[in-house]
Length: 463
Image 1 (cartoon, rainbow, N blue to C red):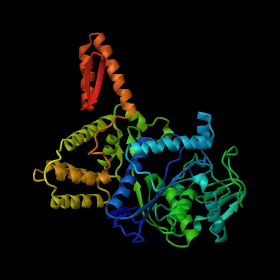
Image 2 (image 1 turned 90 degrees about the vertical axis):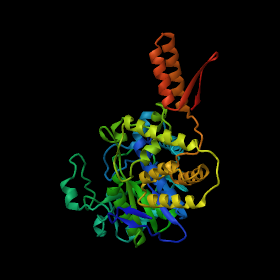
Image 3 (image 1 turned 30 degrees about the horizontal axis):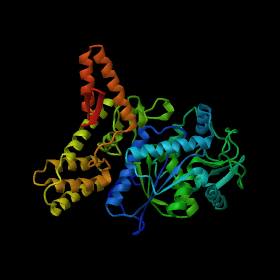
Image 4 (image 1 turned 30 degrees about the vertical axis):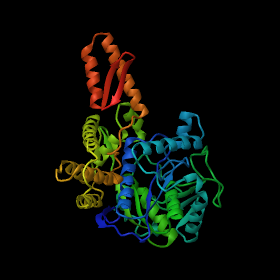
């Protein structure tokens, strides 16, 4: 398997630390709001990575954090506490908010066939490990106390900028004017390991520690959870390109200072989903969630298919027109697959030929677009009988997870959409607007829904 390693900025052969298992850490969500579909694109990429590794015969152990601590997710003591903002918005405690949005996120993952990681840990449950790491960093001289806070001294790490490719001079020149300078730091880019003195005096979640009552810095939780549950040597760490600096840069610094050796060999980063105004972001206040797509009549797996058409390292523009095109392609693909007959004698030779083609594609830095092309080529190959095609596609779907062989079920949100369209059509017919009624019927047919008018009213069924 060959993957693009952000550490070296080139595609490399993947060589795990151990023959027994591959350790994989993925940065999880901050659960103060819904995850938008751009967030889900990232988790789809990570899901494909894990399933590809398993498909190629690796035993994978994957961990993910849930950021429920309730602080701002930056390096500086500025901005607005995300959990506190959610408390003001919803009138719940920080933990109630975190629990609710964690469950929503988990259900969203299920809808787009993302496998829930083997190990999922809330940041609030790992305070003991944070204290252990900070204590050792203080002992070894990598951390220091200033005005009640504990900071990591980046000057002690000569390879600090290795992952990002940045340097301090460039960052100083590009420094935003709206970011307050933290006078407590020895160096401008030192980062907080533990807050006891903060602008967030009303922070709900705080813990007693040898450094004073407070809460951990954002970067610490991923290092702590990864080291505690996956060990001292991590194979692959993933996240979005916006995590390269400073989040993953700081993780490397504190982890290697704590451990005394190289921590992670491969970093993989996914690119953004862009709407018409640029990167999709919750901070804009107007972002698309999965249920919005479902309520508009899309199957969640149509969105997964849309993501798989593009390489994870390419920015993916989003528009409903582009999603409609992907939806049409996905539905044609599924209809073609479901039309295959359980007939003929299974041909193992053809199975092996196509499986090797698929492995070559998906092993090439997760080239899902080429992998889907192989599926289409298989369906057009008249030398392969239906039963063999069914077996091959079932094998491919272990990675693609598009339910290509599964008879479609209807999401509750989609049912509401259909019922709404039926009511609009009935109203159009009552008003003798038959042109509109026919348009609604055709719209539903394009989405795989057939309407039938009966004495009891209009019913629907899947095409």
